[in-house]
Length: 196
Image (cartoon, rainbow, N blue to C red; front, side, top):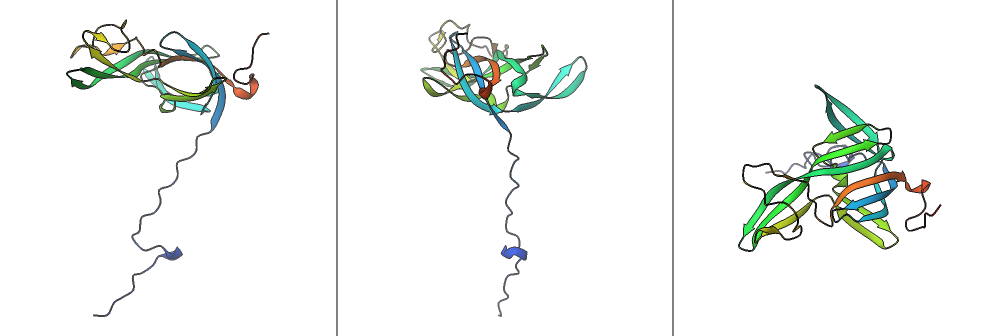
């Protein structure tokens, strides 16, 4: 039997070969100076690179709106509560994962938005200050063991099946609030004294 060469498409690619998926558009980034509030009530001043804008939907009255805000217009982003989910149980305790459930965003012009999720780009924040580079997280895990939480002993009781799985108590190292959102080039470098 004679062999027939496989047909080729223009450009030399074989017919039926997979084409590369179109690249996602790059999101513009902005270097900002932030005041980071942690669950243990401490605060850090740092610089981070975050998306220059955020798009989301929110509800006002009976209408749903699409909104896009610039990062530099945000005055404060606060995590007001966390949703818990049991991820494993063993003899040494029950492990729960805590995700931000209620987020309050206040803009510098006074507008306030409430969301039931945190932007994906802000779940983990890579930042730097005079002490070096670090990462802080908006989500965390904790273990319920011997009638208390391992990482948050002062937190409320363990979530019960069928009950509301929301809590306000954050992990000591998780960030709970971000403030300032000033472009880094408009502010003193991280770690510089600000006594004026």
